[in-house]
Image (cartoon, rainbow, N blue to C red):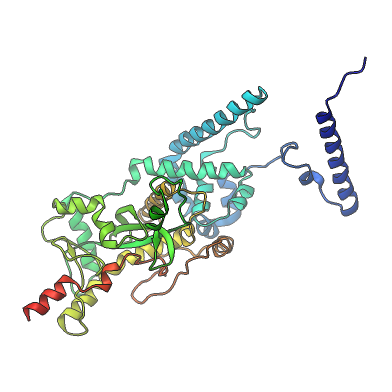
Length: 434
């Protein structure tokens, strides 16, 4: 007695046979490899994985630094610090993903997915994937270079983000120690032409460019919440990042708590650093140097307004000589991590954007503290630059500015200069006194 074959199974068998026949026909006519015609349900393609060491031997010292934004020695030092955390967070993400898949397959077919055929991915490879992604690399190019899947690239990126953010070695917070504050002021004093000895940090804001947030993003809500992320001054959606830097361009403190529509003054006042400054964290006689987007206070020195000559104008010039250090830090920051030169990919939520930018700032400090102690940042590779330029919402140009030894991303700098259009209280008071 012949066995009965369901009609659906017959259709699948016929469709499979036709597909194989078409693949063979293409191969016979055009001489093409028919493996790509099998489709996503065919057998897995063999992948030859490459280690970071192999890639380094291929690239050499100069091109490795250009591709990974740090030297190979710095790369290995960084891995020694966070390699164990990368493994931990990668396993967490892989387990969570497989648990979800396994639950669905067991419900439908009772099938448990097998382990990866090529074994686990090395933590050095995951760190390399993340750094290439941060530098502006295309995930599809990264997966080909390392012989891993597209999802593995993204798992590597977020494993490194979490590892950096949770490592105590990279914690960013303005120091409480009076000794460290005076060391910061001494560096600014050495850079000042007239010997300003009270600058304990330079502060400014930069726009972290994003796509228009989704209403599903945590904290966004309706259209009104979405508009709070629109920086009308720059014509871009994003987040207002407030940062204090030292004379070398290291970030001493940073805060990302407000959308792009916020002024620098309000974004600063919502930060933890502002509350600490009001409680007197700065040593006596020390202040932060900021521009006219901020309010002049006992802990904040801003330039005089509406002056073009005389001692006040001279003060403004020498004040800007130190204040520009934070702008140079932003230039180094954006040039080093090319992903910041375009809008964050649409699949990255606001919460994840904040986490990634925090990690990038910490890696920026690491590059300065480690063997890469220079304000010079390598130009992006041609592949990364092509990926940045071809972003769907455009990209940010790096421009030369007088007084700064690095190019600056002027299109996303100074997003919250709302107070610049209003008369300053200090100016009003001086006119009343006259």
